[in-house]
Image (cartoon, rainbow, N blue to C red):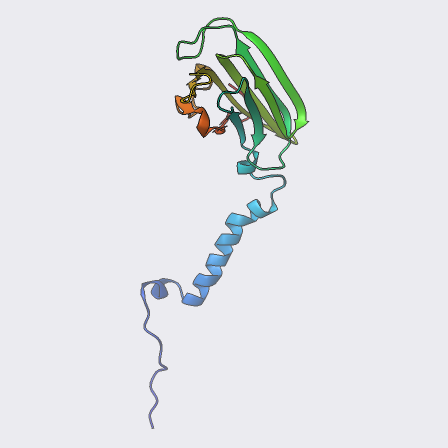
Length: 192
C-alpha cells in the first residue's frame, strides 16, 4: 500500500495569502483595536451629548414653548441659555435691527424650558457640554412667526439666522405637526 501526500482542502484566494485560522484571529484583533477606546471611554457618547432645541405649541395657544436638552436622557450641560429677542417686524427672515432680549440661563442642568407669548421672536439657543478640560458648544439662532393664529391652518414660519446658518430646518411647519426637534450646530470648543 502506497501513501501519497496528505489530502488538503482546495485553497481559495484568501487561503493562498492568509491561512484561514489566522484570518479569524486577525479579525478579532482588528475589532479590539477599533472598539476598545469606545468601550473604555468615560462619560456619555458624542451622540448622547448632542443638544437639540424642541419647539412646541398647541393650535390656538397663546404661548410657544422652547426646550433645550441632550439627545441622551441624562446628559448635564455646564451651561444652557435661551435668549428670546422681540420688537421687530416679520419679513420672513432674521432681523438685522436691534432687539429687546429676555435671557434665561442655567448652569449644571439637564434641560431648560421657556415659554413666549410674543411673535415674531428670535430664539438664540446655546448649550455647553464640559467634561474635564474639554468643552463642546452647541448653538442655533432662529426667527419664528406664528401664521394664522387660532385658525385651522395655523403654522409656524421659521428663518435661520446667518450666525448659525448650518442649522437645517423647514421654512414652515403646521402647528398641528409640532413638537419640532432641531439639532443644534456643534461648534466644537468655540462658538458661533
